[in-house]
Length: 427
Ligand code: AMP
Ligand code: MG
Image 1 (cartoon, rainbow, N blue to C red):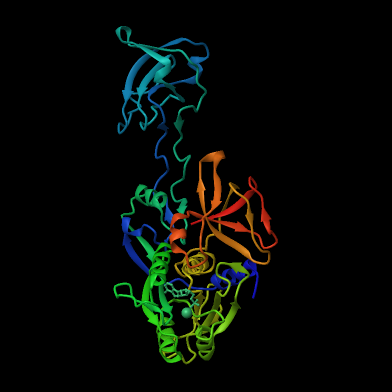
Image 2 (cartoon, protein in one colour):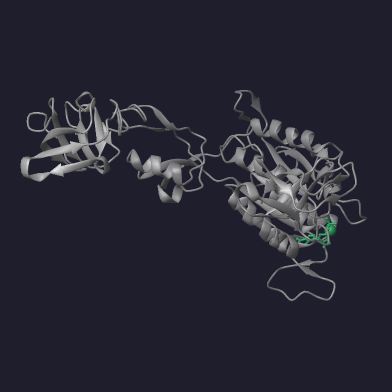
């Protein structure tokens, strides 16, 4: 049994050494949520010209030392126009009408906002009521990025902002890493498939589905292996099958019950355990380990591969044994399995992000475990408040579905008062 922090560190240490899969080409939008296997560079300066950020008049700031000032209007530049300096430039005492997104004509060093001007159509001039400083209301060419500059790093997961960058540099296709294949194996004699009719003492296999959803969300491809009964033989052969994937997630059977056989069977397969149990609630029985792919697990031997450190090592197949209680399964996935999937997908695993909010009503609990309790965050901005969801324990998915975060309670706290600031892990 280790503390939460040690358990998380043990996962992160292993995650550093894993290799992502091979690359593949994806159409840009199909790349959403995928991890870049190439860096994305600026194909030209950004912006590619001095770009007006306001509608108004391109001017020389020095002409507006005293306002109001009257300037001669000598032309107009719309977005998409390219002002030929021979025909459209701003001399002393002159202005050129300009629109947001248009290039600044030669001679100008600022844009006066249209809101501070009045056009005097009859004598082709404009009155400007506010002075501007040189450089105001336009972005100089190359100020956002220079041609060739790296805009997105390899290993970055593409979100909508990343998609915008790739689109802006003209990449209709991107190189991404293959998604890691993550086997999901549920265990338990009481668990039946979701389209069957459960007997009076049976429950449907919700964990395989919540886990598959979490795997997908983390950038992996879930391979649902079904349900293993609480018997050595069938459990072992499904575990062996699961070890053929990039990662194996098991649920159930890791507790201390007479039929909790997962650890024993993994032990028979010469698994190395990094931790068996973490001081958390829910999820205390969680286990993390690996099997060497060339141990007799019924798979063709895999050649030694080089790790990111360049050291040749046998490829390890990692597994997590997650407790079967559905809320425990979900929490332990987020805390421990997610960073491993991110690493296998080619990313640097993200740090856990904790928000802070005031507690709406006090909490009493026992010391000794770090608790992640389903809670409801409501209100906005400085009025945000959080309250524990009313739940019947780690099996209560109905309560979890109503919650939108977990309140994190440090192991040494037995009592937290109304109004105290607490950490939240968003769901
Ligand atoms: P276990 O970790 O095997 O002791 O299971 C703990 C609790 O989780 C028991 O009440 C199980 O019935 C329940 N459980 C185990 N596997 C699943 C599953 N795949 N889907 C939903 N509940 C499960
Ligand atoms: Mg069980």
